[in-house]
Length: 192
Image (cartoon, rainbow, N blue to C red; front, side):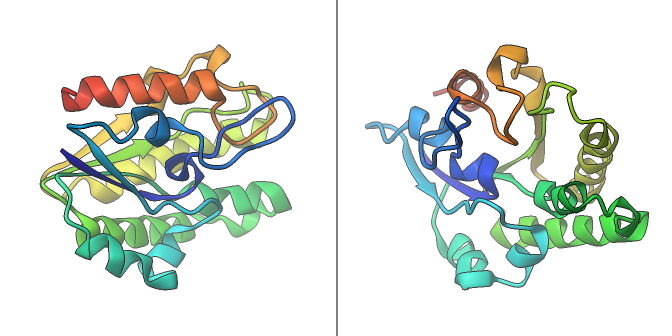
């Protein structure tokens, strides 16, 4: 089985630790390259739906051209996170969220494989940030709405496997326990 992973830091394997985030030690690496599974990871931390939709660094074209049985992706979180970080949530109108959803849908349509799984975000801050509590459900709802009409696309809610122990509450990413839980869940979902 060949698995292609694209999107933002939740796809690019950024792992929260007590001393700060580390790159490239997340669920795709834990799933690993086995005799029966090959992982291609094209995720970029901090990337947005707009960047992917406009083919930054030729990444969308590469994703489209990469032969794979499965595509797993997370995207749209950074589009909203930018509003959270700047505190400029007034700039995050329903229209802008919908535009991000259109960009997300465009990426899915271009990169789609026989089996395509789009991740929803769990709260990586354990409810500590009221703004995230407010906006995260909007992001996940927009993600579901954006891909609802695309045949063969599955939604995977990371909140179904990420418990309080799976995030450290100080980073926008799961910790090693979280990435281990995600790897296990994807293996079960894919039957590997």
